[in-house]
Length: 413
Image (cartoon, rainbow, N blue to C red; front, top):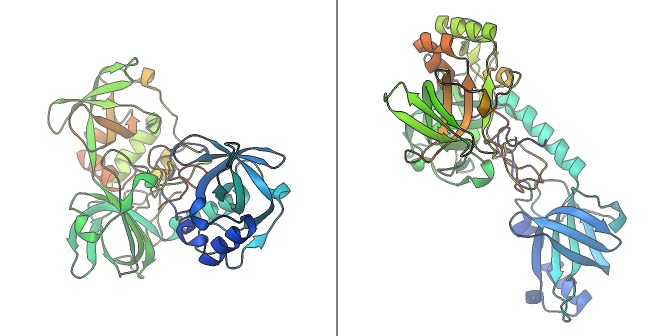
């Protein structure tokens, strides 16, 4: 999955802090004669293999080339594990470019390539299977919406999945809560957080089991963040600076936004724009609230295979459609992914757009998702609010992604 975002997944290699158990470190020291403190850990994606030489691109920093020791311990383990218990011994020849690896590396006294004495590998194929399973899980049990209330004391919050549907989300001490960074919708940039850091108006994704009438959820994972929704018309574009300036209908003021590699921009076909406006305005089947439950939303942080983001969380970026519980008539975010992509040059003065951007100061906002040709939706003001609250905005394949195994060394919700 090589695009910049899809919505966020379970952290891959999250247990690497635990994987090298003391027994493994002791075994390494016995093999090399070195003290454990002399070794360092290298985590990243394999970019080249030549005999016993591996080049690994870390999640941060420059590629590193290591020599695999003759007596190196090489283990294959599924994504997401926290120990090497149950790992399968494999040969060096089984490794492939694109695999994720954690290497226990010892520096060479003569300054030559360091030596790897332990390699723990997650194959690209296993990571892809993990991503697929997580995507399907978020499609079945995920939900997205705008936060209405938070009660950190009871571990309960409510979200609006559109103007008429409110979902109560219950958490436990085991619920993983993450928060997006102020200037990023990559799940890889999201940090562990707590409920008391969530605010009304935040956009939120949650994964868990719903009750029969889709009014309550027991959350296993939550990721939230503050983003800015903008509906307006294009004033100008600046291809050299890669920016677009829009007059925000809400403030009546111009806003300049940055278009970057994680930005996703789509143009609605005329018929789709008319249909969406009508359905959202009526609140009927296929609108933000279908007859059986909340509107589905793509979860942040879907994976990508590159070693740089997206994200999404994951990570694009990374990038996994999510949906609420119940029988949903239409998944807006999935539908939008089938619409034509528009480039900055395709935006013209006076074009109506709907944008979700990272929060920040004026002039420093970045586009997460942009929809053009939305005049019919903006004319039906309630429809535009429904579309925002249905959380289509973080559902693209661009900046909301989390890496999945190659990208940001993790996946996301």
